[in-house]
Image (cartoon, rainbow, N blue to C red):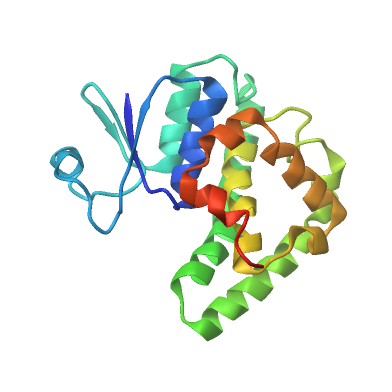
Length: 201
């Protein structure tokens, strides 16, 4: 198994996090998405990150890759087994993408004014969700799940973008520290992502 990954893309980070949580043996090939390697373009003409290659299988959507890895390597499970819980987790990830990753993308890829507005909206949205972070050890769950794998890479990037997690809410900060401390999370970080923790706030 080979995973072509941007060293800074949050969605790629989500995929790498699941790989390490599962203990999957995979080659992580870091590359610049603006200059995809020829070997990747032969298999996926879009050159998008992340792209997972396993024999004849080519997957290039982070959320699909995460689901595939959880089913392909069932232990430890990152989804609960019953259909209702699995569907609920999928809806949570969809909401995280729509409500928070959308704003993160605007912060990273928009002009100064639009980026500032997105930053303000993201801070407000996360702060309003503080009771949800406080309710359970993990995001709306007593156990670590695929939802946390989707959320943690977003939270990791916020301090380097000027959003102090500690100022949002103690419950959000405690949650973030809990998931960041996991061995798999630390192993999933690229050198560039490690630098994000040391970036000026």
